[in-house]
Amino acid sequence: MSGTIAHHPNDPLPKVWDEDSRIGDMLKGKRGLVVGVANADSIAFGCATKLRAFGADIALTYLNDKSKSYVAPLAQEIEADLLLPLDVSQPGQIKAVFDRIAQEWGSLDFVIHSIAFAPREDLHGRIIDCSREGFLQAMQISCHSFLEMAHHAEPLMRPGGALISMSYHGADKVVNHYNMMGPVKAALESSVRYLALELGERGIRVFAVSPGPMRTRAASGIGHFDEILDMAVTRSPGRRLVDISEVGRVVAFLVGGAASGMTGDVIYVDAGLHIMA
Image (cartoon, rainbow, N blue to C red):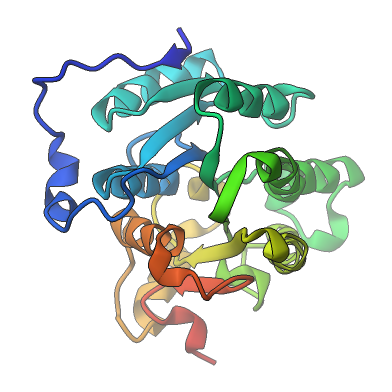
């Protein structure tokens, strides 16, 4: 069942909140949508847990009935206010989510877009060989859906709002085996800059957050992914991978008032990997 999540007032706070809930409710009163939670290892879930730990109210989405069985317990764990179906490849579903948010909340402070897709046969081949259909599908799901969400979020956003999407270092530099997703993520990062210009006068800020490689279900579809992980550990100044909690804290900073003077940036959370030649 989609809709409002019920909570018991005496339920203890989930353990996942403990580390950062002691800092205080710096996001109390803010409401936002997080798209892209597939399981507990999702970058989107790392963002949702930290945003909720800092006091924000959260709406989550799930892709389909199969994924709902994984996402619904996570929504309950972080006491999400709303759990709604969303397949961005289906016409009308993005609008339906924002219509529901308008009905339930009336306003919105942030949107976290953490979804990407490319057909396996196109992703694993040379970009010169990728199909027209596969490239268009990857662009629609991974990039245009962010533009569409921004379109529907704009009338709901209060001044100081933030739109954030997830990118990767392969948008800016050639990363072996990232293949066609490089151009797709480059388009996403460019879209962030143009959205920042268009929405700046309304007080809406736009960012791309670029995490280092980590073991998520989405990333597992990239060919030779273990080599990409090993490269990140070997070449990054931190000599390690980052985790979803570290990404979540950066997103919470961008959503909060401390980042009020920033917009249009690509923020790297990769233990310094992106600085290396």
